[in-house]
Amino acid sequence: MTDLFQKLKRIVSEEYISDSIYVRHAYSRNVDPVLQGVPEYVIRPKDEFEISEILQVANEEKIPVIPRGGGDCEFGGSKPIGDTGIVLDLTRMNHILNMDHDNLVVTVEAGITWANLNNFLSQYGLYTGCLGPGSGLTASIGGGLSHHSVGGGGGAKYGSCSNQLVSLQVVLPTGEIIETGSQANKYSKSPFNRFGNGPDLSGFFCGDNGIFGIKTKATLQIFPKPPYAEYKTFLMPRKSNEVSSIIFSEIRKKGIDVYDAIFFMDLLVSVGVQNGFFPMWEDLKRKRGTIFYVIEANSEKELKEKTKQLDSIFISNKAEALGSEISEGNMGKWFYEEQGHWLYAHNLWGLVPGFESLDAECKVPIVTYPAILKDLDQWDFEHKEDMETILKIAGMRPVTGSGPIILLKGNTVELTCGFTSFSSYINGEYHPELEKLNLKLWKSILERVTKHGVMWYMMGDITSRLMVDIGAYNGEFYNLMKSIKKTLDPNMILSSGKYNFWNQ
Image 1 (cartoon, rainbow, N blue to C red):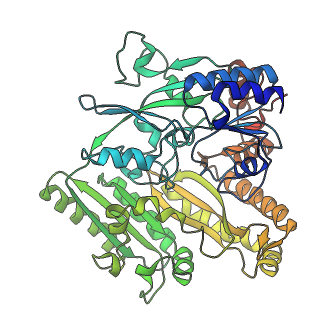
Image 2: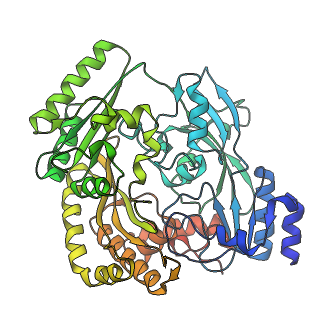
């Protein structure tokens, strides 16, 4: 047992630290299938003070620290790069600390999941607006803020989850603990507003992918859930990619307040139905793309008017309304009423054993995604030899395309494009060539999509390093980010390797 292990054990007690090979391997992976390295230790602190002590020890020992929330990130965001480091599991810090009914804000520890928070709020007829990522059943509040996450519901109305952030408590890489927003004033008794007291340092830690500090507490706006809702699902006509883009644009141009609007491309519907994932669409004569909307209202009159306006957009673009019940194809009802908002996004996982999704999740203008989807078809054709190699090993060809395309606040959508492949273990047999091939193809498709000018939000180590490696960052922007990182984290220990900021 090393001196470092003993130092860390004194901080959290033996129960909450492990150097077991089984535990370390369990924390060496998240949703993506690419193994980057195994940590030396896994530790589970209970509060910001223990985290501060851990970081101080890590700086003394010059060892990387990798913060981890729910571990649902798809780009290696919560696992080490190389066989080194301390994985800091924040899931013990999962308490609701205060709900302020007067100011409509809630303060929580950053390790709580979006699902647990919203289940609590639902008792009071409230929700967080954007419900976080589609993986919100297990994804943590801190992780969602670190990625500007969206996709679990409410994205069209509220935007990314970081839009509703009021204040943060953050432990900096060297161990100092700071408060942002209204709490920057030491006389403030409780959080109530984000903007003021100087620069918006809350935003500084949003979307940082865990490189600038460890989020320990967050205060979020909460919203009353309107009493009325409507949801309709439509079967798309031909050229559904282009038509869906037109529909999204018209919704925005007419200023209709939608809670969500989500498009499923043709390929996703046909493959999903084939594999039993979309039972509500099995009886469709034409397995084309589908699109649904969800709207909320404070009166029946308001709801009826919004429904009338939306229906006219869909019908004028030759979309065909499906039945009102889930069994009749109305995914919108399942999405809104039966917690489908935390399940629908996982359509590419678990279709067949070992099936893995290698994503390229980004935000793009509404008008541009049909061209990106068309280019993905071209990318697939250009890599057909590699695809055939995977087919021979796995017995199934990878599928290139996009998961659900989600309307966001403003004239933007979330595009979950990429391809599916297989992990290196198939029917109990190890195929190391699959690991190399997956990583090669993944980086290739990420580079291709980057050059369409997209905006990445969940970057992890894979996309953040690729952006640097291919020279996609504006030089002045990257140098500023690097100088800030060096100031806050002189030993480059926190999330070492992301954006090519390496611990030396």
